[in-house]
Length: 181
Image: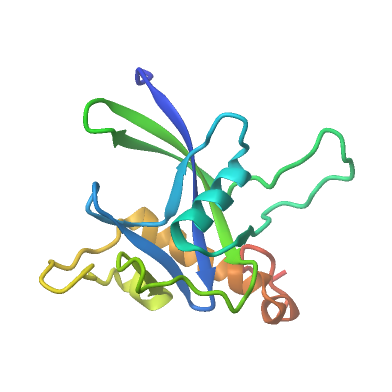
């Protein structure tokens, strides 16, 4: 497999609450996507995904941990991503790839909500909409668009993980992936 001439390291977060996950309309790509961006110099992937989520939605989030921390403090540990995707990208002039670390997030304050009136490109998608591949329009007069398959499947997985991490999910005997223990 030939390597592309350029790869960027990025981090993406699926913000889940209850039976839904928050996506935004990416104007350049004309797609419904989760929130994320390039990892800045001196920043680790978790710092990046939390910064991007807050900058883009106004919601302070926390990462859902997928793996237990090991019993040592040095060197420090950061939560691993749920998965890593290699995505085709373009900055308008040059094609490249994003090596994208995918995290599942929940609002740090369960009562916090994004200001959907400030940015009309954000929308909560329910698990049912994602599973059905529902086409949604970003605004009146715009044709509806189905979120990409990877976004739908990861969105559902984030909803399942968030429910499992909630007090009700833990009392039902589910692990962080939403599976019965």
